[in-house]
Amino acid sequence: MTQELTGWNFDNSYARLPELFFSKVDPTPVHLPRLVVLNDRLAASLGLNPEALRSGDGAAMLAGNRIPAGAEPLAQAYAGHQFGHFTMLGDGRALLLGEQITPAGERFDIQLKGSGRTPYSRRGDGRAALGPMLREYIISEAMHALGIPTTRSLAVATTGESILRETELPGAVLTRVAASHLRVGTFQYVAKWGTVQDLRTLADYILQRHFPDFGPIGNRYLFLLQETVKRQAALIAQWQLVGFIHGVMNTDNMALSGETIDYGPCAFMDAYDPATVFSSIDTQGRYAYGNQPYIAAWNLARFAETLLPLLHDDEAQSITMAEDALSDFASLFQRNWLAGMRAKLGIFNEEREDESLIGDLLGMMQKYRADYTNTFLALTFDKMEDSDLSCAAEFASWHELWQARLSRQQESQASSHQLMLGSNPALIPRNHRVEEALEAAAERGDYSVMERLLHVLSNPYAHSPEQAEYSAPPAPSNRPYRTFCGT
Image (cartoon, rainbow, N blue to C red; front, side, top):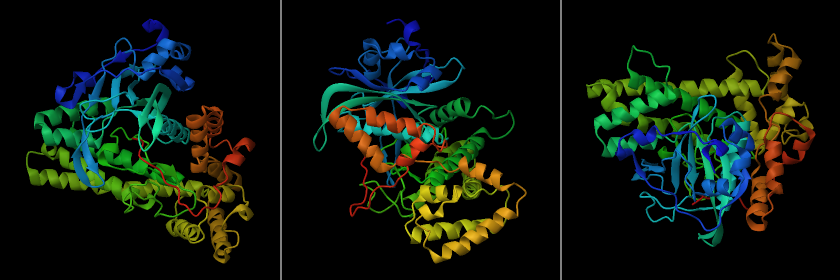
């Protein structure tokens, strides 16, 4: 297949960095590659030809059996704190094919996940199961539709091979698209095993790639830290506003581009509870919903530590500069979160009492185990009879305070309603709906359930009739929902 047919247009700036940062390795061929999911719109935006990608040669590329012209496959090296413990990591089952330059001149990493062993695989087989790859496809595309910065999923190809986990599972390869795969852990790796010059090279690279607005005056590495703090404060606030729980916020899972990355044991909260944990391995609740802002700040502190040799020649000065930059995170997060919560309640301006108004609502939601998403929907459409709070005596008093708050702003009731419509999604990828789609696809080869789910998730603020059935929470169960790392 010619390059013109597929549309690949690779540049490989990361491959031109020092070899300390990566290992060049080709994907391991699979037995019988078959494309089962393709993101046509994303493909077109990247300058790729969906029809060509659906061909046999296209499937071979997306499964790792053929290397596209211009690609330079490599596995990136990184380290990270996993549940607070530092370790050497790296892309153990993923390969960066290269950086696709789009017709608009944008640059995106194209990565194959599940493409075989690399020097960083440790004891892993370098493969991935179909279910977890489809899960990442669904959740990452839902996050994109919600307007939250995220890596994207271009395709999933099955391999015709089984992989052994607790049982035999069908193997698959996910093609992931990202602004980059640079992580806090990338800097931790270079700071641990490289030189100060290596660290400067990496910092200059990420500044050029993700922070091109830096001017000729000032401390460029302090600017890098400050801008990273800003992006993460905005991102985590967006997670909180939709009830998203990442599940494994290790430092290697914090992308410096400000995108959500690595959808392993992630899920969306049903009943509101800050202590909600879905990950089967997070037994202490380190990465619970309510802890996510604090963990983000902790991860950023680890990033700041790696930059100390670059911030200033005097170590004490470097520490002071880093601490000042990090101290901004809490206020930036709070500002973003409050602005989002005001919008969810139809509030345009700011009053000092807003925070307590919001806190009282969340407190009632936690007390009565009210569904997070549907409570805000009930407020949006003034249908509190559908809410878990409808019988709560204190809710009537809160509702009066809220209505009085809305009456004190210049904007009309209709304007508030429109603001709420655009701030409260009609649905989220409910965990039971995701599992329903994965079971149909992975166990029965039926992708129609997943296709319908992706369709209704593609415009979560449409509030269309067809989305209603997907907004219902799961039936009561004595068994808590658990997710697992997609290894």
